[in-house]
Amino acid sequence: MGWHSNWDSWLTLGLMVAGVLVATAYWRRRPTPQDRERQRRSLLTQHGRLASGKIVDIFPAPPAQTYQSHRLAGPLPGEDMIAVYKYEIAGVEYESSQSISPAEATIFLPGTTVVIRYDARNPGNCILTASTRTGSSPASS
Image 1 (cartoon, rainbow, N blue to C red):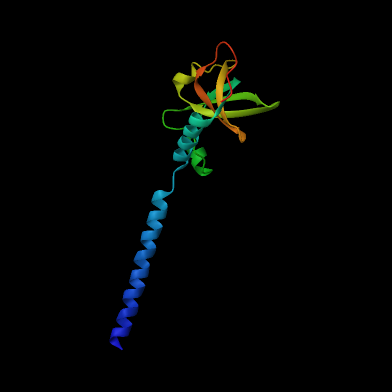
Image 2 (image 1 turned 30 degrees about the horizontal axis):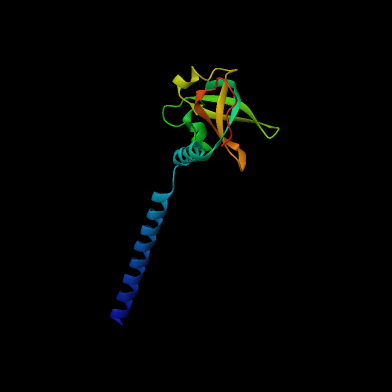
């Protein structure tokens, strides 16, 4: 009878340890909002189609607490300005925003024509490219 009750204790302890290990593995692998934003930008940089857009406004990013309370990515490190821009795909006008660095804010002035990359399956998913556009319209990828 003593062996049986000891076995139950070991089984309970083993299950608790396994649960803690599974929970730890789950939370460690879960990407942060900033990780997801970096991945989204990387995919659009590699596979996004090109289009032209226009900067509408530039303003300072809200404090980090604003994003954390809503579980949003917020600006990436070093990006403390927000650029608002418009672009048109297949006759539909889109407006989006992106966090940018103060150095980029000197390039992306309101009214500036810029190149954006967008997801062909979801044109609302887009990013600004690092340079402004001059000359002919961008080619579609």
